[in-house]
Image 1 (cartoon, rainbow, N blue to C red):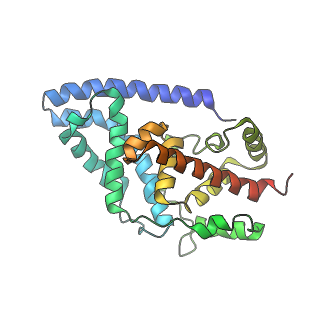
Image 2: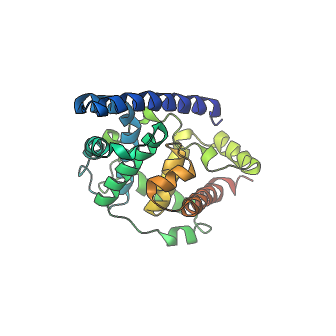
Image 3: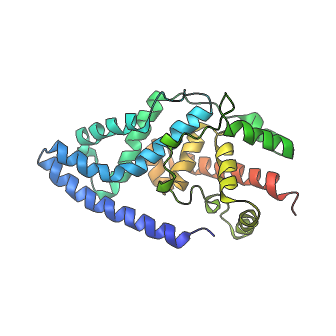
Length: 258
C-alpha cells in the first residue's frame, strides 16, 4: 500500500547522489570554477524545483499570488548564486541538501505573502455535510473563471510518484487500518485532491513543515534547521497537520461507511 521499500530505495539513491555531488562541488569551488560548480549542482535541482512549485501552486490556490507571477526557476536561479557565494556554510555532505532547502525557503518567504490559518474551517470540520465537502473541493479544483487549475508548468508529478501517500497521515497501527479502508474506497487522485485541499487551509508554516517531511523526506531536526525554528515547534506543527488531515479524511469519507 505505502510503497515503503520503494521509497526507502529512492531515498538511498538521493543520498548517494548528494554525496557524490558534494565531493565534486568541493573540488569545483576550490578551483573557483563557477560554471562547473553550477552544472554539478544542477543534479540536485529537480526535487528543489518541485518543492518550490508546490509552494507557488498553494499560494495561487489561496489567492495570495497571481498565476504567472513567478516560476520555480525564478527562485532556483538565485539559489545557484546563494550556494556558491555561501559555500563555507556547507560543512559536509549532510549539510548540503538541508542547506539548499533552507536557502530556497528564505527566498520564498521573502517574496510570498503568508496567509492566515483558517480557524473557521477546522472548527467546523465536524459539521460539514457531503454537499459542503463536494462544493469546497469543486471550488478548490477550479480557478476564478471556472476552468480547471492544472498548473502543469509548476508541477512535474513524475518527481514524486507517491505524492503525499496516506502513510504520512495515518501512522499508528490503528490508523493504518483506516488508511487501508480509504485506499480501498477512493482512487489515489481523489485522496491527493482532498489532502491538498485541506493543506491549503493550513497556515503556511504548518503546511511547509508537512511538505518538507512528507514530500521531501527530511527529519524533524533537519526541518527545524531549514525553517530556523525550534524542534518542538516543528513537532507541534507536524502533529497538528497530521491530526487535521486525519480528522478531515475520517469525517468526510469514513464516518458514514462504518
